[in-house]
Structures are given as structure tokens and as C-alpha cells.
Length: 520
Image (cartoon, rainbow, N blue to C red; front, top):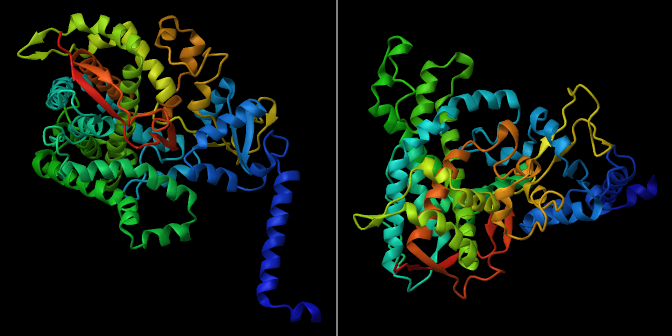
């Protein structure tokens, strides 16, 4: 004891930390309930390996490599398991709540459909926004979707094919116009006000930048202990403030929109019966619909004003950020695959006559029934869906039977999940999985359809899937009919390599392409 007392306090402290780390690693490797799950020892002993993959923005690649090396189930963290197994997914994505990782994507510090962990409370939230995304309601926005797409075509024609246009900026602006009309009933004129020649700043820049930075902020929040996250928010550096403050900038816009709706709609001044409130049959923006829902819903289903803001923010971020990335990859593939472009043109050119100086865009119903266009959409989402990352769930203690994946028992409290990146590259389901082959979907098997999870799985899948399918089809056919495509030297396979901050992005963070007006 005298010898121990003579040791410096720092030595004792460091020795204690070393013993704790050694003990923790030993337990995780040799005694943990997941010790029998295949996987590398360095992933089993601590979360450092997985965090490192997140910092490199390469988690999906790393998990895919592990699944190929170890089989369809791998331990990637002391308490996390990734797998590829359709039978397990039916249980995981119907009966297991989300992991706390999703809380990194709170909007305005409030829960949204993405961050609500348990399925019961998510179902309440879903009942509030689901009417907005029905086919009849979305069809009411067809005139504006066509109008804004024509605006984008006109803007692209200004360049006359003489300079590359960054597709991420182009589609972010176009989807800002579409999404803000759908979510807030407001015209942003983001495309019309864009100085495509000189690229000068305008008011749309701030909100678009904030939307694109939000996933990066989310990853930083997910991997940072709470004290570190608080410290990061105090950093005085402009870049840190820009990234970490993006949530506040989006929230300020949404709060202004909410206040305008409340001020302009007399329903919010009514004191009479609920049946005085306007009908769901009217075309309403998402935030307007959510606010009215709070007036007539049962007490347990009512959304607070803060919840309405948080939910509207989440739908806006998803509508602009993820879809603009996917569209950029779609057009890039059309530019490098002229045979695919030609087949789409065979379908759409006869349906897009010139009227009033513009090629008219077919109706939503017409576009939904074009086989090759649908096949192109499905294949693009298979390989370039914007959220291919692991969808984490927690095994609850309430399952009726002991839960297992591929013969390995998984105890309650374990974080499990699959990722679209790996499911979509299963060669037993998708032969030659890395090849971009839209034609595979013309004769799709039931296995192919059931393994396609570009918008998530089960009841927690993406709320805006139908809206995304509409405007993606509209934008694709408008570009195919109006432009020939070229890839400039600045756009390379390396710059287009995918990186992952939950959502996917190209490594180069830009996708310049040349749009040459068709002369036929």
C-alpha cells in the first residue's frame, strides 16, 4: 500500500483507465452474448472501428465488405449486428423500435417521423401527414410540378450547351420550388432567380446550403458524446457555425411559414364546432394540413406547434436533399449510357409534342405506365438510392419467441439492421449486381421486387415516396426530350464515387454535366 501511495495520481488514473479498457475489450470479445456472431475482433471490442468508417463517410462500403467476407450476418460493434436476410427483416422492421442513433436527426430539437423510436407513436404521427401524400392530393400539384420543370428547362437552355451545369445545384433549386410549394404552399422562385451564367448569390442559396449540410450535422451529432456536442456548438469558427447552425436556419423559415398560415386562415380563429373546419378534400400544403389536424384530432393525436414545425422541416430536408442527389446520378448515368437514353426517348418523345414553344410534359398517370421509364427508375434507385445505409433497430424484450438471425440467437437490447446497399447487391437476387441494367426490371421476379428497399422497409418507409416518384419521372422525361448530354472532364468516376453521411453524396460534392439543346 505504501508503494501504491507513492505513485503519482496521474499514473494511478492512467492505470485504472487501461485496466478498464482491457477488461471491457476482454468481456466484449470472450464473454459478451454476441461473441458467437461472425466478425472481426477489432469491431467486437469497441465502437472505434465503426466510428472511423463514419468519419471517412464509407460505412456502407465497409459493411458490405464485412458481409461478403463473413457471410450474411456480422458483428460490427460490441452491441451491433448487420445482416442480409429477408426473413429476419420481416420481424425486425415490423416489431423492433428504432435505435437512439436516429435522435441525431431531430429537427428544431423536436421529434419527426424519422426520429420517433417506437412504432406506436410513429403511427400517430403518420396519421397526421398521410393524407398529404395520397395520389389524388399529389395530383393536385401536377400543374406546379410541370411549371417549375419548364422553368428549369428554360434556365438550362440559357447555357446553350456551352458550359457545364452542376446538377446538384440545378436539382436542389428545382426541388426547392416543388417541395416548398407542396410543404408550405409558397413559391420560392429558386430556379427563376438563379443566375446560371454568373452564379451570383441569391436568397435561395442559404436555405439550400442549410438543407444539404443537415445530414453532415446529423452524423457529427450521432458520433459525438453529449459533452463534445455541446463543445462543438460553442466553436467560433465560421465553418463550424455554418454546419451546426443549419438546423436553426431551416427552422426559422418553417416557423415563418407556420405563422403565415395561422394568420391567413380563419379556421384558426374559430370557436365553434369542429365540423366548421375546412375539408381534407381541399388542396392544402403539408404544414397547413398538420396545423388543421391539431384542431380536429383526438387529444392523444394532436400535434403541438413545435411538432408541426419539426415534422415539416424533416419532410422539406428529405424532399430536397435526397432526391436532388438521386436525380444527379440518374442524369449522369444517362450521359454515360446513350443506349439507355435512346430507349427512354423511344417511349417519351411521341408523348411530348411541341406546343407554345415547349415540349409538353405528359400527365402523371401516363408517365407511371411507361415500362422502360419505370425500369430505369427502379434500377437507378437500386444502385443510387440516396439512403442506402443501415437502418438500425433494437431487439425488444417483448418478442413472443427468442429472436435469431441466420441461426444466431440475438438477445434483447442488441442493435440490428440491414442496409439497402447490400440487399441491392445480392447476386442471388440481382445477377451482375454492380451493372446498371434497367432491362432487368422488365422481367422482374417477385424476389427482386420484395428485396427492393430504396425508400425503406415496412411502415417506417419514406413518407414522400409517391411525391418523389412523380417529380423524378417528370424531370427525367423533360431532360431526355430537350437535351443531349455530355460528361465534362471535371466529372470523373472518382468524383462520382459515393460517400455516406446516412444519406449518400458524390465524393466530389458536385456533378457538372453539359446539356446541349436537341435540334430535332
